[in-house]
Amino acid sequence: MPEKALKCVITGGTGFLGREIVREFLAQGARVAVNYRREERFRELRTLVAESGEVVGFPASLDSEKDVRSFFSRVQEQFGGIDVLVQVAGGFWMGGEIAETSLEQWGRMMQMNLLTTFFCTREAFRLMKENGGGKIFTVSSRIAEELPANMGAYGVSKAAVLALSQVLAKEGAPYNIQVNTVMPGIIDTPANRQMMPEADFSQWVSPSEIARLLYRLCEPGAPVLSHSVLKMYGRL
Image 1 (tube, rainbow, N blue to C red):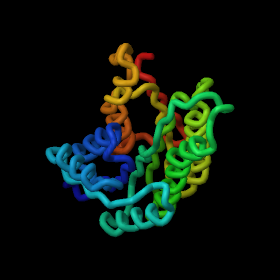
Image 2 (image 1 turned 180 degrees about the vertical axis):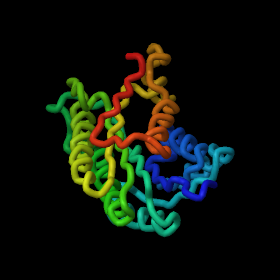
Image 3 (image 1 turned 30 degrees about the vertical axis):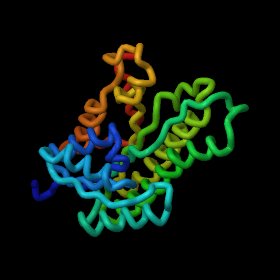
């Protein structure tokens, strides 16, 4: 492992997109830590990326302030700092009209997407301030820009993620903390293929494309980039 290997946190690393990002960063020599809620999912991840490198994991529910603080503290102890946070963790709900959206479902989207991003970026930001800087990537959605009808809870939660990220980018400038947001269109995952079996999957953005872009923005010599929205819509 390179002496100055990147020290990275990838939340949601046991999910389909997260796994590809973990694999890419490990393959490039980075040290990677992920959170998990179910140990068997973490074991599956370790097996999947074994040829690329070794990933470390700690149990944490990202909608728990206590868990998130403990998670980042343990990563700090393990790695001696954090250079990169890729905040992948989140959730999707197709939804319906706002008039038919329950408070429970509205709150669930805000919890899964906005609250988890707030907790994780806040802890990473604090550590990066102490360590002289870093890079934070959040994940929004094309839906956050288009805000179509019948997807209000999800769209508003992802728009809020984008807004939070823009605030963090401004606050991070004095501390050499760069904050950018990935805004994908439809990601080519098994779940999306099952949901839209008649679609042309070749038009969608692949998880590996997202992973490669993220690493390129972190590698030595990468340009200083902050306050940017990285629109990855595939060919749609």
